[in-house]
Length: 261
Image (cartoon, rainbow, N blue to C red; front, side):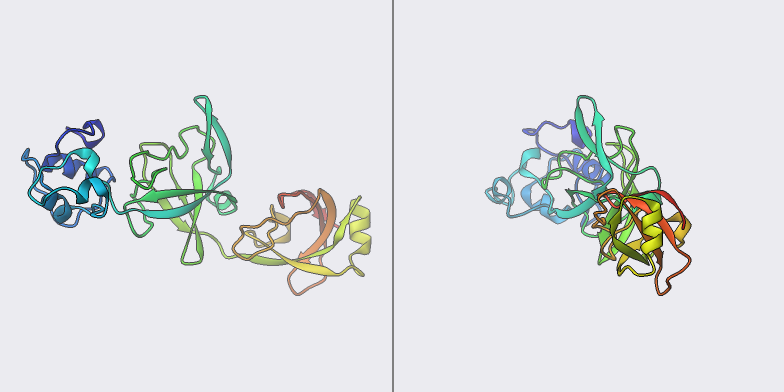
């Protein structure tokens, strides 16, 4: 019987436990035999990363049979970055971006859990630390690209639906530095004409050229967007005052009407 159809009050066979590992609910510590023999507390802690401090489990004697609800994995939390709230089946879930580059710019966050200690392709993600409630991912069809930060570096990955696993884990491009001039103007003309005398602030983007920048951030991790107030700004590449571009920068850091001064 598959792990996900086993009732909480049913005892667990070695075959059930093996299925739980195959489908991402636990991590194996040793090779699990295929057998209908029902497992004991001692068996569970020998073969999978069960949380031995969990009260229903710790209360059992070593030679007692366990039921499904006695078992939960040691789990690890991950902050996942998504693009938007996506309406699906009467409620909102976490919608990803349309592609990997856009996914690297995701800023909304949710904490998810996994029994896997190092974020990697092939792992499942769960809403709860007990790893019973599978994450929806892109089940709503809004976008399947998400972001995670591992040891200070950003990575994009795909998670296509509730039955999926992490895929296409790819390091995000390095950030690029730009100079953003002034404090916001009401017209492109004013932003451009005042650029030679305006002070500037360093801002950051995932794109490498003036013509392709889509969003500015105030930090090199590309997490905190520049709050532009939907005003016009002039901007140049780092270390130079020309060529000069101008654009409207929104409160979310997004650029619109971008072009050369």
